[in-house]
Image: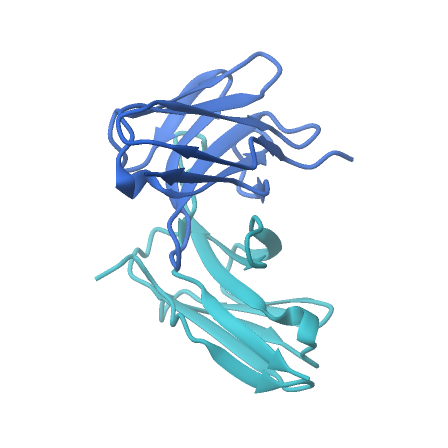
Length: 112
Length: 114
C-alpha cells in the first residue's frame, strides 16, 4: 500500500523565485493538506484541498497557492520566495476531509 | 498565548522508564486530539488519536485527554532507544462538514538512554 509521496525531496532557490512542490496522496485518500514546518517548530497548516477545491486555509499570504488534480494529487506553489520560506513542506492525506491525516516525508526548501 | 503549548525539552530518560509527554491548549472547540512521532528529517507518523475525554491504549502507548482542564498526555511504557524522536501533539475541530487543518504543538524532543 503506497503511502504519501512528495517530490522533490529537497531543493534550493533564491529570493524572488517561484517554486512548485508535488504530492501524491495515500491510496484511497482524496483530501490533501499542506503544512510548513520551520526548524524546531511544529507544522503550521497552509491549506487543504478536497474535490479539487481549496476547502480550508490557514494564516498564510496569497503567495502560497495550490491545486488538486482529478487523480487527487496536489501541488503547492510559492511565489516571490523570501528567506523565511525556508522550511520543511509537508503534505498530508485523508479520506473525505476526515480527522486522520497521514504525512509524507516532506520537501526541504532552502531559500538563499 | 499560543493555542497549543508543549515543552520542547529535550527530555532524557533511561531505557525501560515510563515517559510522560504533555500538552495544554486554549481553544475549547478542539474535538480531536492526536500524537505524532517525528524522526529527524522525516515526516510525522500518526501514533494515536482520540475524540473524547478519557484514556486510549495501544500497545506501549496510552493517550489521555482531559477536556475540562484542556490537557492531553501521552504515556510510553517500557521505553526503548528506538522511541527517541520528537513527539508532536496536534488538535483539530470540525467545521463545514469536514475536519479543519491540524494545530500542532512545538514538539518535545525525547531521548531514551540505553
